[in-house]
Amino acid sequence: MAGSREFFYRRLHSLLGVIPIGIFLLQHLTVNHFATGGESSFNKAADFMANLPFRYVLEIVIIFLPILYHAIYGLYIAFTAKNNVSKFSFFRNWMFLLQRITGVITLIFIAWHVWETRLANAVYGTDVNFQMMHDILSSPFMFGFYLVGIISAIFHFSNGLWSFMVTWGITISPRSQVISTYVTMIIFLALSIVGVQTLFAFI
Amino acid sequence: MVETKTVKFIITRQDTPESAPYEEEFEVPYRPNMNVISALMEIRRNPVNRKGQATTPVTWDMNCLEEVCGACSMVINGKPRQACSALVDKLEQPIRLAPMKTFPVVRDLQIDRSRMFDSLKKVKAWIPIDGTYDLGPGPRMPETKRQWAYELSKCMTCGVCLEACPNVNSKSNFMGPAVFNQVRLFNAHPTGAMNKAERLNAFMEDGGLTGCGNSQNCVQSCPKGIPITTSIAAVNRDATLQSFKNFFGSDRD
Ligand code: SF4
Ligand code: FES
Image 1 (tube, rainbow over the protein chains, first blue to last red):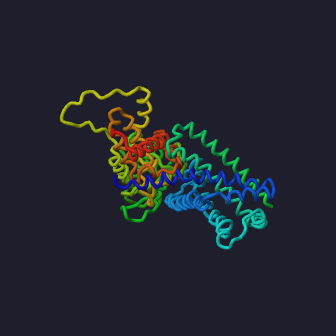
Image 2 (spheres, rainbow over the protein chains, first blue to last red):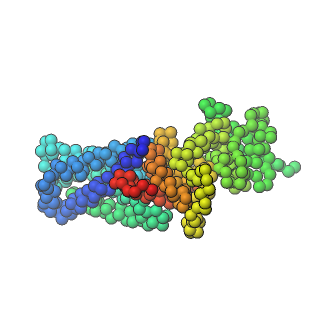
Image 3 (cartoon, each protein chain N blue to C red):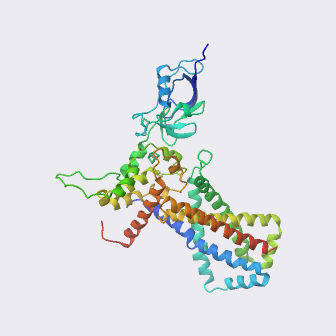
């Protein structure tokens, strides 16, 4: 079988977006939501995560490498499309465009976010806790940046679930694809509430 | 005095495959029930542009004149569709005609759709039954299946779905939405199913089914109303199973 690498790369990209990246996103949003219970509640949860056994292995294998692959291959996918919503302004075509835009925004956001809240800790030993997030988010600019970044990531995940189900051949009938549109948009709204609540809890 | 009614056209023209495109305006006398092709024929009969200058007749492609061959596809008022079924009465004027740029332009509105036929050859979109002796009658097909398979067989390789697809462009090698229907159609046929794995494996190669990004413009644009996105997901499922079979192994079929 000559040249079926593309199939493997693309399916891997699709799979990684949900497992483990999507699962990680859910976990990350949940743990951070402890912030709504106050400073000590958040710090306790963050400490628990930071002291998980095999932390580096988990971080590298479950988070870092999958995101890196998904991001690089995703950029390639995004830039091989020639978007045409002005001519074909159908709902799914807009979602197709938004999926690519939010992907790029999420990548920029994650790069900054990982540096600020993880790598800086590894390099300079800065403390990662409630106070740190409070300091970051007190700047209105950074608050806006986090708001856009988090909502983009959640949209990219939710709408990505929809296309994941088409890509793997789970939702075939038009009806199942319509219903999964509703379901994934409800997921988007619900997770957005969780994310935004958390953001406000820090300030 | 009765003013004669006319129809105005703005046509994107191109003299050779390599030369630069340009626009030329035409005004042809109106007749009831005109379609874009009959207007083009009028221009061919009297190749004079709107400024009154003699020009070369506009070139286009056509065959069936009843929206079943797909040859006359072009971009009409921004929308890719068949010129033979585009009624002048239903179009806003001036009517803008342009070639479907997803394909190489041969001349004016005439394009070369070879890439679509090449794709069909690649995925073996046929049923091999030729041989040296009579194979006898094939297996029967359930009526319900025949009904949906018939819908897929309506594809006329017109290229509209490729023109509408954001992932079919010069940066990608994606074969385009139409191929999904053909793979599904021939795999659904009881005799064709004997070569299902072969077809799927060919379509799983580079430029094949993974090029789809689910913009679903194709299903919205297909003039034959073919459920292309259903075919896409169905073929995706078959490909998923096929890839497991290829890797983990199973009896070859
Ligand atoms: S699937 Fe529809 S739009 Fe695409 S080539 Fe066939 S008939 Fe044309
Ligand atoms: S001439 Fe055959 S589709 Fe128009």
